[in-house]
Image (cartoon, rainbow, N blue to C red; front, side, top):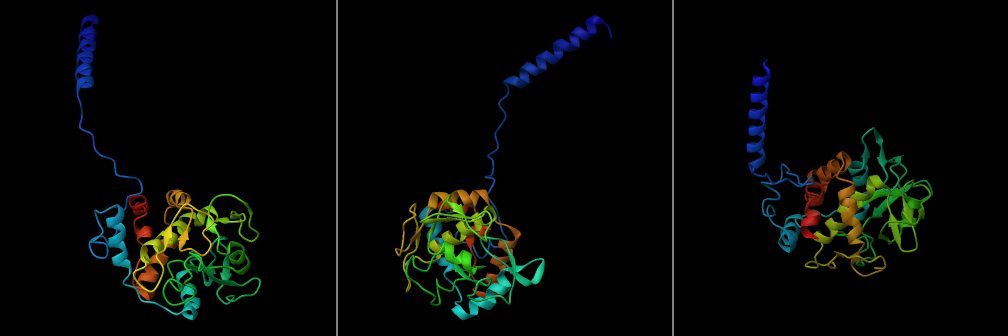
Length: 267
C-alpha cells in the first residue's frame, strides 16, 4: 500500500473515531444483582409484586398469614423432613454447625439435637404454642449444647468461638452464626417480623438494632441481619426447605428466600 493511501486510511479512521466519541448512546438500567423472579410471582405473590416499604410488608403479611399450624410435638418429625441431609437421608443438617447428625438422636441429652427457635421464644413470650412457637420457617435442628449457648441472644458479629459450632461466635449478649448460616438466620428473623404483626393472639414482632432485647418482642441487630442477607444468598438447601414447608406442612412461604431483595425494599 502506498504511503499516500496509508495516510488517507489513517485520516478516515481518525474522522470516524471522532464522530463515535461524540455520540451519546442510550443507557440501560441495570437490574440489581439480588433481584429475582419466581414461579410464584404471578400467583402466590401477585398482590405484592411492584410494591415497597410498608405497602410491601403489609401485602406480604396478608399473603403469608394464611398458614396451617402444627403442634410442638409434630415439629420433631417435620424437622427430619425439612432439614434432611441431601447426602444421607438418615440424618439432618444442624444449624450453626453444619453437622450431619442421625435423625434418631433427637432429644435433650449431650450429643442430641433439639428444636432451636431462631426468633427466641422469650422475645415476645410466645413459648411453644401453635403459631410462632411452632412455625417451621424459624425452627431448625441444632446441637443441644450449641442451642443452649445461643439461648435467647440477639444476633451480631463478634465474640469468642463456640465449641461444637466452628465458625460461630458469641459474647454476653449476642450470637454470630457461621458464614453459611448467616443469610438463613437473617431471612428467618425477618420472616417472623412480617408474619406476626400483632393482629392475632401474638405480639407484634419487629427487628431493631439492639442486642439487649430480653423479653420484648424485638430482635436485633437489623443492620447486621441486612448485611448477612446480602452476604449469604439463599442456598439450594434453604430453597428446598421453603418448598417443603409450603407444600407439605404450613402452606405458606418465606418471601425473603424467594425474593432476598425484598429485605432492602422493606427495611
